[in-house]
Image (spheres, rainbow, N blue to C red):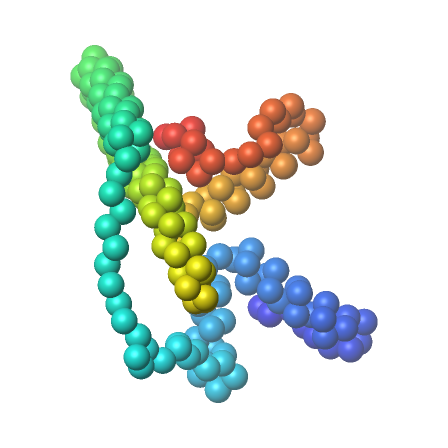
Length: 202
């Protein structure tokens, strides 16, 4: 339900809007999408984009530096190591399943192994995707800065759009750290790295 903005509750319009936004954010992207669909259906929201008339599109190749290539190769080796260790752990768990003497216990172990295998693979490959997506985005930044400076020197306006930066994941981790700090835990880190937190999650 949407927050009420009745005057009887003593809330100003500003407070009601803030509560509404907070409620949508707390319920995730799905709630925001539903809200947008509802507003568009009621005619209260109109989504437009800038005209592409006269626009020129081009693809710029961001060549990797030797340092970036080394970083990428090291990252690939790291994830290969994580995959190997995960498979070894699953192999040991499968042996544990086969060691069960009682048929009922074996069925329970099989189900536990099935769930664990699915969770392991899900966490590994989703983390793998987030990690390399963030890494590749970061490797494009130097070329992007170069292009932006060139455009500014030509008295042009620069608009930069970043997608899939890992900000949402890092924000969730930050909230967990703040909650842990509020409970009295000693938190040493002041700066979050989305790829680093992805590795910790895996």
